[in-house]
Length: 84
Image 1 (cartoon, helix red, strand yellow):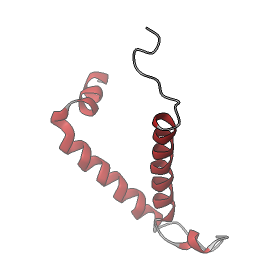
Image 2 (image 1 turned 90 degrees about the vertical axis):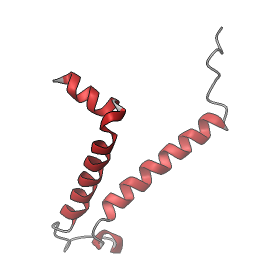
Image 3 (image 1 turned 60 degrees about the vertical axis):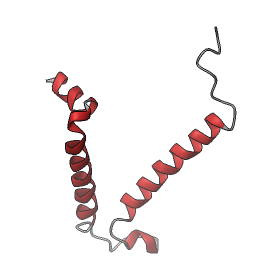
Image 4 (image 1 turned 120 degrees about the vertical axis):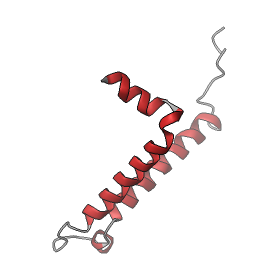
């Protein structure tokens, strides 16, 4: 069974199915956010449906870009043969 999971996520043959699955999960997350009651929110932006999904995605993308910047421009990353 684990072989099928590894093949699904590692094989280029299943790329179209992976993309469809990703979009389906994304749509389900945003759609379920419409069902959450919002009468006890503190901030105005918490009333917006889909806000938590957009905020989480944006935070993840920002984290990736900051870490890439620190690795390449900040000098934290070394060449592959650094210790040879």
